[in-house]
Image (cartoon, rainbow, N blue to C red; front, side, top):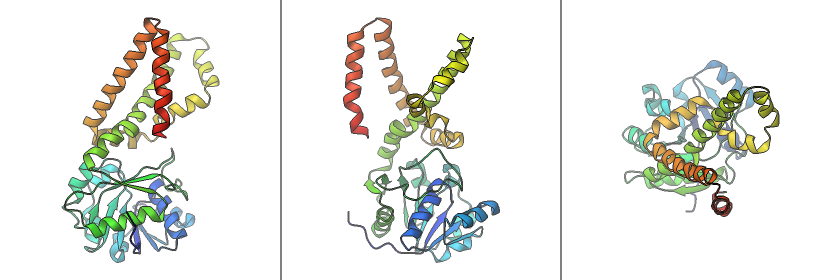
Length: 288
């Protein structure tokens, strides 16, 4: 897919991790970025950090934009303010960055004729106006989930947006996206959270100096496996709420794998356990 010429100015609604990082990268490439935020303190800090060319609390800032990126949390994306919808030019391309696509398509397709559902797969544990950083999207997947009514020219513009920040553009159906991210993005959040809870609970039950000792001994392995479980709780809850069925299926598959490993341990079947771990060693590179 060859990117078309990216047209501006570009509007960004929300200057958290994704919106702020996008604003930094687009400005570095000479694009004019017009940003809409909903708190005065956010606007002031965003101006100080130069996350956009112009920052406003007034939706009217979007009226001259050729492309508008809705960098909003899922709850606000799925219940957009009427003033926001009305301020977006009818001819503008509109895309989002939400981590669940089917409900977003269902909501926004009737609201705007040039909507393209998207999901840049990039992130850190940081959130809010301080989180934006340059180069966040470089080499990362940017998934687009067009449906039959999607305007092909609008799709081309969002492909160009992804290319402008050096992301890898992927196109797939919304339902497949949601089931895939339930497995590789949403499931790890709950698994990581369960690890943190389980370790803390087990250490407390054992008592003595164990609760303090496990914290003193925790190193890079525990940090890696617990990172997403210790992330933004609002984001994690929204992902689960908006992708509940796919996430339940993913948890069931994980539970089956965990029970199999538990059986090997209980039966002292070390050869079977080693074979399972060898299979995992071979599986992992394909996911990275």
